[in-house]
Length: 127
Image 1 (cartoon, rainbow, N blue to C red):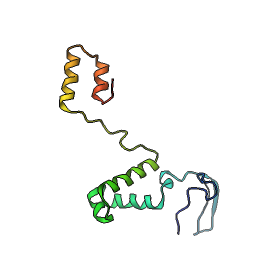
Image 2: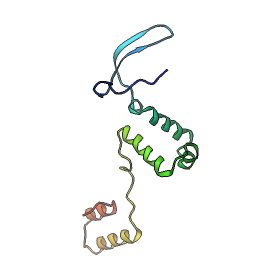
Image 3: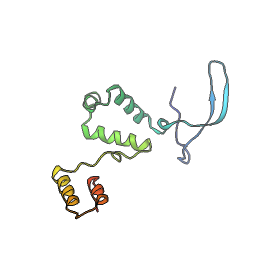
Image 4: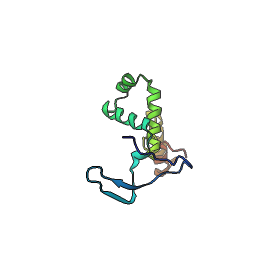
């Protein structure tokens, strides 16, 4: 059995599921159904996700199994994340050096900046 296509072969618009069929009892249900987030993934992306899960998210194991470099695996993971509707790294905290952190806190303590500005700077947002 093949995976259902997600794009129209004529105009490339997203396809919607409107009919489900049970081969066991020959029942057919018609309506509008959601295919879920994974329905947007290509077969290559789905195989990547299955490999990722099987390797317990360990990229070094994926490097061995797929014979690909770390940057290639990371790029493919980012493609999957985007296909699922997210932006990679968006929710990751910004790392700032301890020196920068201390400088911000000193400026706050000295009254050079207010608490709101210090919070923005500690989050990595520019003033």
